[in-house]
Length: 199
Figure 1 (cartoon, rainbow, N blue to C red):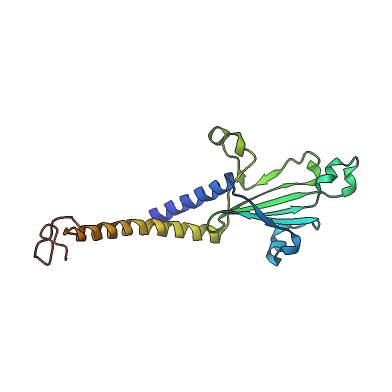
Figure 2 (cartoon, rainbow, N blue to C red; figure 1 turned 135 degrees about the vertical axis):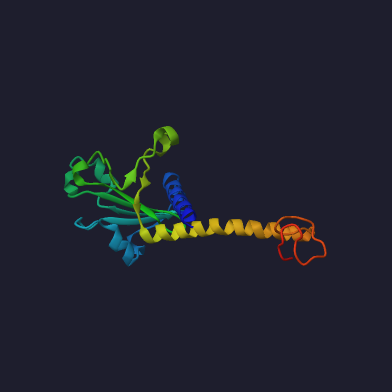
């Protein structure tokens, strides 16, 4: 049982990191379509009211993007007239439940370089994945309900697979006139004369 749960946890992390490194096509909705939960979770505590909030999602991930700077502001000769600037993105990764999260943001003092500061994220090794994924990160902060849910789900699937294989194997053997347990030919006895299983 513990072995299955450990394997389920490993698969949960592997699936989440795969979704983080190779995200699917994004869908999104802007502020006017957001739910109350989106508004509560999108803006970091102590940050000014945003100019825009976007929630994007795809297979295995959800992204809350809070923006207080517009792209055309970068071209202004005096961009400081836009006041406090920030870009904050929280990513929640995992399937079927979101299990891990990370965040990155660009505070005002990093303008105009827009160098992000990452939290709860690992950089993927370039030698393994190549330069194409270097702007992506592997989330490390657990979302406990999703992490536990995915772990139990994957462990359950792994536990059921051997049972299904054994059942299918026994059914095929019965059809061929063999003992479902040891594959010895069945005679007239109510039990297998080789292994003693009831027939």
